[in-house]
Amino acid sequence: MRERLGAVDRSMALGYLIGMKSNTKSSITLPRNEVRLVEKLQKRLKAKSKVEVVRRGLLLLEESTDRQALRAQYEDAARRVRASAEEELEELDHLAGEGLP
Image (cartoon, rainbow, N blue to C red):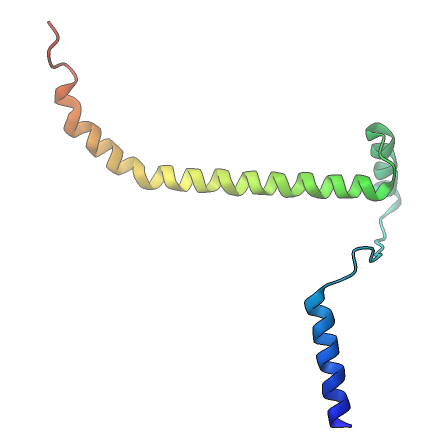
C-alpha cells in the first residue's frame, strides 16, 4: 500500500510539474450588473466571447500595475540621487559663468 501511495504521489507531482492542459476550462460567477457590463463591453469591443473581454481586461490590468510599479521605482531612484545631484551641481556652479564677458 505504501509503495502504491508513493507512486500516486509521484505521478501527481509529475502532473503539477508538467502543468495544466492548455484547454483547461474554468468558470467564474459574476453578479448580474457585472455580466451586463461584460456583455456591453463585448459589443463595444466586437469581441467574439465574454471570455475574450475578461482576458483583455486582465491584460490591461496587468499592464497598468506594471506601469505603476515602474513609476514607483523611478520615483524611488530619483529620491535617492536627488541629494547627491544637488551637491554636485553646487560644486560645479562656480564654473557656470566662466569665460563669459
